[in-house]
Image 1 (cartoon, rainbow, N blue to C red):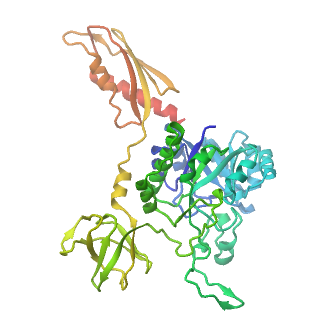
Image 2 (cartoon, rainbow, N blue to C red):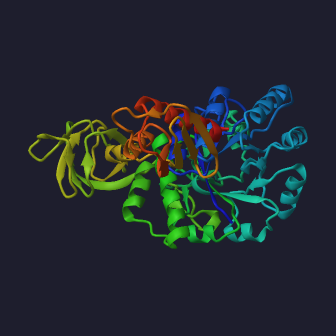
Length: 493
């Protein structure tokens, strides 16, 4: 069974980074009816652009329409569904049962995935959803892999393998709505589970140092990738439409490499460096979650990004903090002092002689400005890494292999271009008998291989060129540009 890597995108920049780093599919939300109302999200024009970009690179685009719909919104939501059908997106992710029924009856060719908000965890629910026209179900995050495997392949199975967990049952949390008037089932969860709480027993306050009693760790199943790939799960889903484009780029490449290494080389090795980068980008502490029956999925100490430990505070005063580094530190990095739960950007970095420096290596003693009023020793964490950000920005773009077959006569230049799925041909009468200098195969190859600013790379080319033929270089370039533009249009559709 082919496995799909499904990546979140809350903006166009994130979507492009997901696709170019190896996503098989991307899921996004529009400006309305999506369960992440505070992501940047996509206008209708951007959804059309996103679909074209995904299809150009052979990826699929799924759009969330996964909030509960009020009767007063019916006309707007049906108009939106009509637009998404015309836009030719690959599937809709929906939770409202009435809306699922309407979509299938009105647009039977439009694929429907039942959102995790639909709270699906039984065989009976899967049969019910199939009758409604659903083709895939996003199963609850509270299910174990064993429970998932026990469900027959009634529908395609989509499962979260990385990202934030909810303390409540999928799609059933009312805490944000009751406490703050913002419903998670309407896309505006206030994340009240990430707030500190006090515990009372018989009206007496229990003394505890752990205030975040409802805050979960981050799901990270990367070390169990072999079990996932050997399962009946079709789609491996990453959570994070609110995450940064850099996070999206790294997490996509991280799981793409992991999946491909296992499927091709039967290797599931994760380097310590990759784990360190992953933790630096975002983590609340990692857990294998309910998926692998881990008993401890909570982080009672902090609901925020923890980063990685990089040093110890040796001394401090009102102006400076003295730190012994256990990892490298660069000017511009973000650090956090664990004990006081306060952080800062290292705008200025000093060596032991108080000379300004750009970077310091592991084992060095350095100073930073005391912008957080630190008054105690403790652990220093790195929460943002400028070098990692630059590395992510330099990730090579995904390129699509193409083949060209060029047949030249005394008059006609014929270029057949193929991406091994789509093929098109352009014929132009641009050739003439050479008077002094004939065009060579090397010249034709050089001009046809000018693809640097396109999504393609030339994997193979065949050239048939008779002697004593002259072809203007500008005309070869025109044909190449036209062929590439036509292939882009064909793939995007």
